[in-house]
Amino acid sequence: MTIHHSMLRLTLILVLGGPAFCRADVRVKDITTVSGVRANQLVGMGLVTGLNGTGGKNPETRQFAVNMLQRFGLRADPTIRAQLRNDSKLKTASLSVVVVTADLPTFAKKGSTLDVTVSTFDDASSLQGGQLIMTPLMGVDGEVYAVASGPVSIGGFSFEGDAGSVQKNHPTTGRLAGGATVEKETCSPVGEDGFVSLLLLEPDYETASRICQAINIVYPEAARVTDAGTVEVMVPIQHEGDVPTFLSLIGQMPVRPDVKAKVVINERTGTVVIGAKVKLSPVLITHANLAVITSETPVVSQPAPFSEGETAVVPRTDLEVIEEKSPVTVIDETATVGDLARALNALGVTPRDLSSIFQQLKAAGALHAELEFK
Image (tube, rainbow, N blue to C red; front, side, top):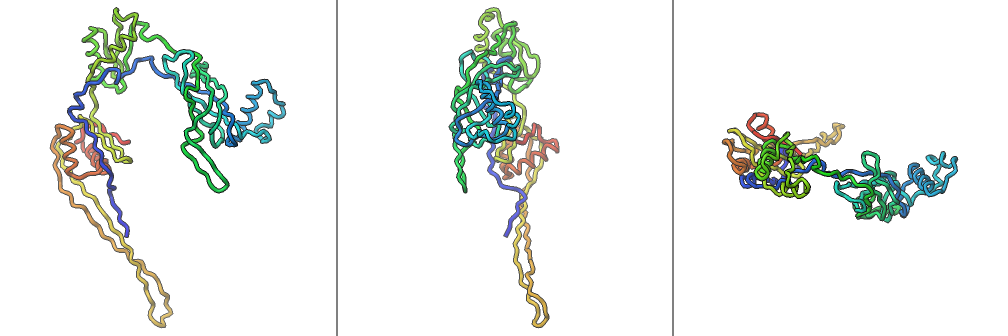
């Protein structure tokens, strides 16, 4: 017997942003960043040695190995170099060419350390037990800002035999905690021209205006809104020589951010998030699930005696359609998210049902919110 449901039942997790949430104040530093204060990505290519037969065997691995030998004064014969892409006599099972990445914070100083991520570039099967050889890490401008080296930690393992294998996590990607040393700084003074810009994490004109007002209460006429995502602040005379302290004081100021009316639905996890400002126009909704029950009862057909017929199995399918009876519900214009939640719960809807209902409400113009699917 097979049962087909037109709607799948999922666990409903309804996260409400009620009035109390709307009135919550947050710090300016929690909803903004300072222009110019950001991390810079570094990247390089290096060689991991000391692998126990799990290294790469690609021509690129052999080429990289010969280049490393040449860096240390061991010159290879030109004919050997020309045959590297096809000659597999040079064994590289203990080596792997890797891509090395790191994030350089804005205020990192020379001699400070960075965490590094390494991932295989060739066909190596595991970096377990490997050692990263000194690798320069470059920025987008091609300059070397850090140098990485050290033992690779993969946080797992990979073993295999002739007829089986076992693996934990991803053995072809690893990390070096504090594996890179900063050689060049990227710090540029903030506010050296007398102005600092606060960048909103969620651009919104109303929130930007509230931040501006909060700053101007303490420092009159110091801040102005340039666009939905930027508040420009003039450094007061008393803080011209100490901009970090000024930014610290601004960051602690409480602000009540404004949020868009939004409904976010993730059908994969069964999560529904309804924003605090979501409103519905008066609307009538009816919703029901449909179940189709299919049963197969094959029948054996026997021919009449002496008829020279053959025994055959004749398929027989029984179908039963059950439609869940659901009342027609009238949803009045909602004043709060709680009202909306109670109205939807009265319908007994699931997240998959909500996906369809909200799409239809949006199409009908009754949902006054942004609808977003994850």
